[in-house]
Image (cartoon, rainbow, N blue to C red; front, side):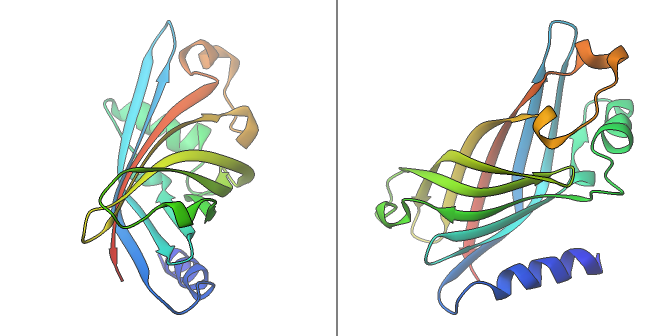
Length: 178
């Protein structure tokens, strides 16, 4: 817990003084579809910061994902994501076209550009997202895929047919003034 708080404080210190928005209860869902089995999980513990210049840092505790079956959750944490060794997934970067995201109540198409780290492996990504100012907070929605091979997530041969090579991820965040 101390490491997670220290990490978030260090990331926050990189943001310049000015308006910032934050969340501690963002939702991240993932879905793995194969002809053998579908696997899905939800995490409602995503946290993060968004600065007035479009820079952001988000963290998702891997142990926060909840599955339909306890055995799936156990395998996910122990065998695939190795959550004791790699406790968090992170995404840090900048919204490339931040100046287009006006506080006008409309949804705006933006690109989140940065480093997505899962299983300890950072991958540079450009993720199309939607952003809206609702008068009180920023709403962020996005859907993208994560290739297990890109993040060196080991999938044993005997279960390879049950886990998709690309996992669908959806994110919903509501960031309030800090």
